[in-house]
Length: 579
Image (cartoon, rainbow, N blue to C red; front, side, top):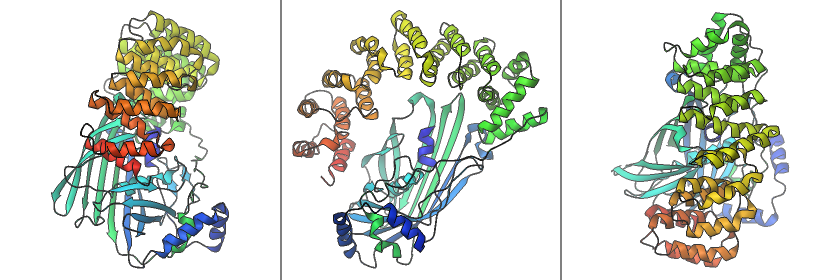
C-alpha cells in the first residue's frame, strides 16, 4: 500500500511568521547553503513586485477503508494555503503555509512535523501549463510531498491537448477539453502503473475541472479520485478530493526569507514516522468479537486483528473457524478479517490454521487465496507455511497454485534462512513447467542474484511474457547491464521493452555507458513501429542526468517528429526545460 500512503498522508499547518527560536532552528538547519546560491536568490527576490501574489485556499479530503463500508468511514479533512509570486514570465516562487500536524488514517497515530511552511519553485507557461515543481530537496517520501500533487492540479492546457503526468504510482495520460470559455476539464485516457501490478487495481475513476479567465491562474479547481485496490485478499477503496479557490490575501512577509527558496532548502527535513500509541486490546467474549469485526470494517487496525486472532485460537475450534468462512450470509469482508486476524495472531497454531484454510477445497477460492497471502506475510513463517504452500503448488485450481508459488517467494525474501530451500523448489518448477512465467515471477520475489544464471536463458524465450519476466530479474544487476542494454536495442515487443526499461530505472541500474546512447538514438529514429520508439523515448528521458549537448540537440529534433505522439513530444519539452 505504499503507493496510497505516499500520495495521501496529510498536512497540517502553522503560523504565518516564525518565532525567534524557530527561525534560529531553521537557520541552523540550512547553514550549508552557499553564498553564491543565496546571492542568486536575493537577485530573484529583487525582481518580485508587491502586487503579484497569487493565493489559494485548499481543502484536501481523503477516506480509505473496505469498499463495501466506505460510506461509514469518517473523512480526514485538511486545509492549508498556497501562495505564488512571479519572478519572470514563466518562473514563480511558491509557499505552502498554514500547515498543521499530519494525521495518519488511524486516530491513534499522529505524525509530528518540523515544517511550518514549505518553499518551492515552479514554472508556468502562457498556456496555463505548470511544470518543474521543485520542492527543493524535500525527501521523496515526506508527507509534505503532496504539495506537488496539489500544485500540479492547478495546471491546464488548450482543448484537444494530451499530456502525461508522472506521480508516485505511475504515469497518467490525459486529454483536455474546453467546456466553456471559462471552464476546462480533462479526460483520463490511461494509467501506466509502475509501483503496483495492474491486475490488483479493480477500479480507478477521476473527475477534474478548473474555472479560469483566458490563460490566467485558475479561480477555482476541483479534483476527485476514486480507486479500489485488491490488498491481502481485500478490496480497499480510496477517495480523494482536492478543492482550491483563489482568494485575496495580504502580502506574505515570508517572501523576504531567501532561505525558504535556496537550492536544497528542504533537504534537511526529516521524514516523519507514525508512532502509534501502545494499545492493550482484549476480546473476552462473542460480543467483543463481533464489535471487533465492525471496527475492522472501518480501519484495518493490526492490534484489533491480533486480539481477534488470539480470541479465536483460544475459544473456537478449527471447524468453527472454517464454518465462519463458508457462511455466505456473512459479509465477505468479515471473512477477510478472520483470515487477517489469524495472520496477526502470529502463533504456531495460527500458522497451522492458515494452512488448513488454504487447503480446504470446500472454502471459496477467494478465501483460500487470502489464506495463502497471509501465509506468505506471516511474521516468522516456519516450515509449516512452506510445506502448506509447496503442496498447494500442485492444486487443481491454477489460481491457487500460482498464489502458492508467488508467496513461497515472499517467504524466502522475508525469512532469508529459507532462501536456499525455497529457491530449490522454485528452480525445479522453472525447469519442469511448460510455461515458466509464474516460476520466474516467484523467483523475482526472492530477488537473490544467485539464481540469475538459471533465469538468463529465458531472456531469449520465444514468448514475450516469459522474456519480460526474465528481464524483470536480470535487469536489476549491474553486471548484466551491457547484455540488457543490447537486448533493448533489438527487442521487438513493447511489453519486454517496458520490463527492461522500468527495471533498470526502478533498481537504479543507471546511468548507462555513453557509448550506448548513439545506438539508442539510432533505434528511436529508425523505421521500427512508433510504439517501440515511444517506449524507448521514455527510457531515454529517464537518463536526463547524463545528457550532454548531443543528447539535448537530438531531443530538440524529436519535438518536430511526426512519428511520436503529442504526449511524447510534450514529455520531451518538459525534460528539456532549463537545459
